[in-house]
Image (cartoon, rainbow, N blue to C red):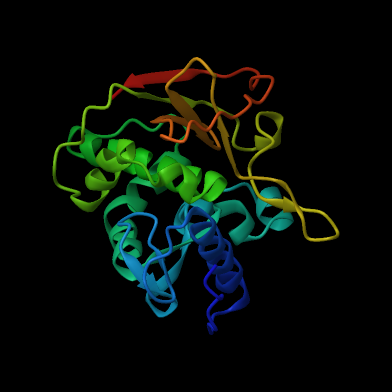
Length: 245
């Protein structure tokens, strides 16, 4: 295995970079030199070209109830990864404003001019959440090319995947009555005990479901055949908005 590079990054970014670099090395997919692949464009990038990405945008989290904001940090509520500067900027400009509306209004219904962008924003959110939970072993597949291409070309019509997403209504003032996974939590040793994202699938299905708080999005399974155990139980007293895309 290639020796781990000597990098100069803040502690949070360094920890994420190490995890991403190590996985690429284990998969035999390290790009030439001391870099990693940006999860969205899959272009090799050095650590200097990477920036910290809040998967659930910081602007969306300001709508969290005060009790949640007091108990958990912004980073723990957003889910973190690294993106290249170009992809980070594109997500912030073109998709984060729509994602904020999804989290501000649990039953958000996009205006006609927002519908294409809203669909792409949901898929991008789910793609990054799945990457954060499952890593490169999940995203390094041609099955996810339509999702990546949609992200990179914001004004194009979204690809027709035949998949669907679900939005579940909830009481914002008491979110933990509906969901456990509203933030990352850690034990005294620093080991993660809960995640802001949940991924699961049925062995007979060709999709995985990625839950980001009240939003569930379907994405294709990886060529590597990852099968995840479904989390038991469903949120009580919910209303569901089902859309096929």
